[in-house]
Length: 337
Image (cartoon, rainbow, N blue to C red; front, side, top):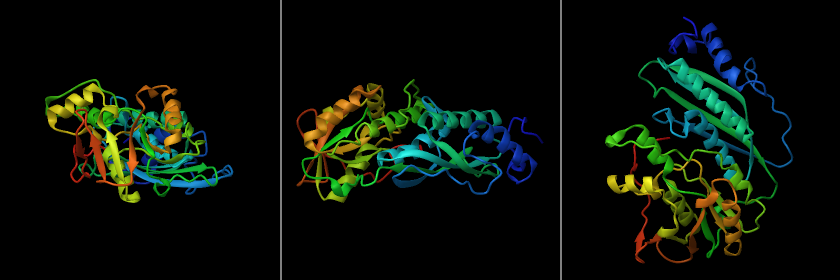
């Protein structure tokens, strides 16, 4: 058995020569050259810049493994580093755990690892440590990834729901629901197909553009559960109501059309390259201007405000009425991440 065979076998996870070849010929070849040392069981990191260390961990499973605008490899980098970015940190290092199902095509694995490596380089983060496991055929979804991220942020930076005040404005950095609908279309479910691309990307430019605003209260990336879930988390933590403006929330026509056909609400769909920010009212316009000045930021919008009274999340409709945006209970789509 050799790595140049078309598919991964159980021997690639047995700790012997085949596993060593897999690590060296795919993972080390794409991810090496920095702090990653595949001969060590623990990696010493260079001294971190002055600041607070921020730490996060995440897991990734998506079908299909490749989709328009991304794949599970780039998704893992962006998903983990985005969690650091919305906490006000600059991502520096990742660990990578790879769970490969027996039978996965080697060419597919290499494409995904190469994509992961590109996303890491583009984001300015290094993969410092990792591990691989091969699962018997039928016990996995082709490929699962688990990551841990380390970043640093300036001392004293407080971004927390506890900092949110009545009257604060809610902003979103771009259209919502793109990733959720893109992955569904890539599966060609319900007889639907399309060319919508995922919004999966690093949000680091978006978060760093706001960090010097004294009125920046909180940031979150609306992944699973989408915008609605972030809104409910804020309402629950603050005891306030969130009043959102439906006409102000950016939704692409393709996303809206699929949602109308299938009865989905785009506000519950996952995004993978968007930021929801809460900003003091006096600096909301400045925050919006900064986002719109960034490449691809033309859809950023102020979409609502924090109200001390009322039901948790209320949407003002295009017709001037109001409706409650209930908290998510069931998956609106098959699991996508």
